[in-house]
Length: 327
Image 1 (tube, rainbow, N blue to C red):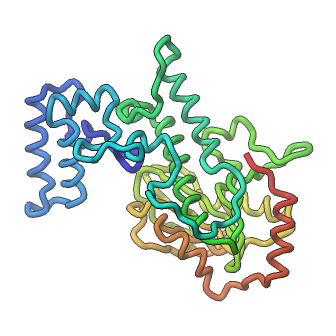
Image 2 (tube, rainbow, N blue to C red):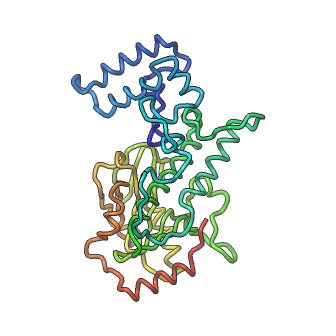
Image 3 (tube, helix red, strand yellow):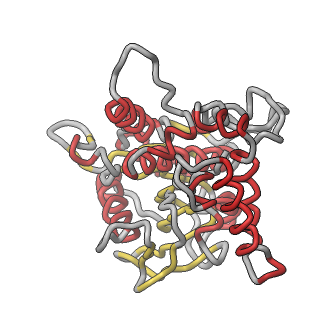
């Protein structure tokens, strides 16, 4: 199972069409293995991806299983409830129950994006008499980019939420915070549903400060440029950090609070460094952070930034709780 629905399918990795014969697959595998072998100047990560692709398609049986959607795991992985349809669930993979105190959390991380994904997937496939498994890996890899991005958004939010839960009882987290106000409530309008452009994925309050956190997976590496992030996975002219700053300002005005920093969380392989300072955007320091270190970053906080005292944090939490509306 790929980590992200935006990753290439096994057919894409080997560079063949889905209608290729088994012999064409074998030749493509040998060619790609030579091209990507580290001893011949290739990339170890790409070489490993080629091996995994061959594991899924290398025999008629494994290929048939993948094509009919039975390959939610590699052939060599053990069959278990945790390895089947991993994209369909946000539960932890841990087999041991974690009894440590968790952060106080509100909202449903990734819920809006999952709703959009399932709606788009069923519309794309068509509603027939047979039930559709919308989390079939092969089906997802064939789906249009918009559908894969919706699932990637959900998975990114859920992965960050798991890390935020481990911050501990000193932290409060709101997931899916609406940032545009209607006549009497905070809303995200229907036209914004495609990319959730009017919500903050996570608002985090703790001893280290108040943070606006956006979880992203653009399916391509990102790098800083002029105080923002650029990536081949972003639309032309899109400025994710600037957009997050605008949404954070809306929440801050409504609750009469001040954010400590803006954070964009990305998959580890999308950023060169664990923590990248992006400068200040609309008066707030901004950072791009690898997903695996977001918990550490939030516990450590921003160097030299003022930290709320106990009574101040209680007041900020009360104001946010009274003002925030979730989507």
